[in-house]
Image 1 (cartoon, rainbow, N blue to C red):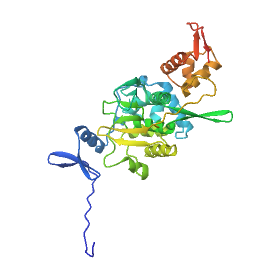
Image 2: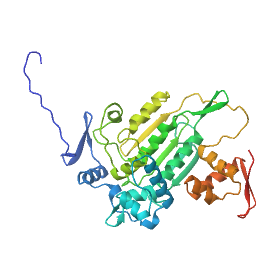
Image 3: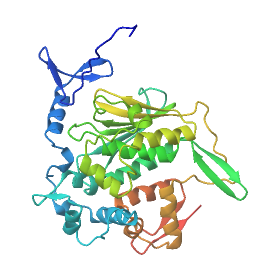
Length: 362
């Protein structure tokens, strides 16, 4: 430098955290960040190779929802990421290596048990802050059930526009559904299950936020995974592996990039926000509300509502249980959507006994 010989000194280390003046610290960019007690605990467990998802669950095999497990195996087999089909619950779990010391793992609890510790909170707010809310709901269930409910909830609340091409009409959401689903899957896959907080969806007038508890990997930024070929840092490797098998995760470490590219393609602004206690994906809505065009007066239905309605059209005497079996969805979810179709005056129940039938009104 300036015709002078120099010695460059570079400090590196992976043995996080570092201790000074009685405190634990990590390096974030050009700053020293003091580590909280919960973060320190997580680092110790990580360094010792302990993960929440591969620990033994208090749940038992009898608590597993067999329909959900069969649905998962069907998806994974169809994706050609496993080579076996469902036989029995225990044998299938052993093939998936989800039984340890003759007990099911925590990953099984959130993947296949309807009764578990996770809950999704969803709300719609009137403005751009949390002062006044228009709707609020709590959802419980396994990951697959929550993903379906979360996606349906967002699809019902966002704006859609219609493009008419000859006879067909294309309904286009203001935010790409592929990006929304990717953000939802990531929020459940990478959340910190040691923390008591819940996953959250907040829909504002100007944006949609998808939050999960659990801070972003130390010394990394979202840009590292969007613009660089960074290897995925998994908080729940067993859970992530199984979501990869079912093709809910396409490739480890590619989630943020897929969200970013999908939003860029559709000219939607997206932000990835690191918080001290969690992580947010923020989709910004267009300032000018989009008008939904209608060729003829009709009722807007969600994708799942249309599927339920199709089953009723095919067999007006079909039962709630039969619809649930055909669509691989819980009876509780089917009941919820039947109620929505009745509220929209699309269907009507004729007769209150099992001998009754459905009548399609619209």
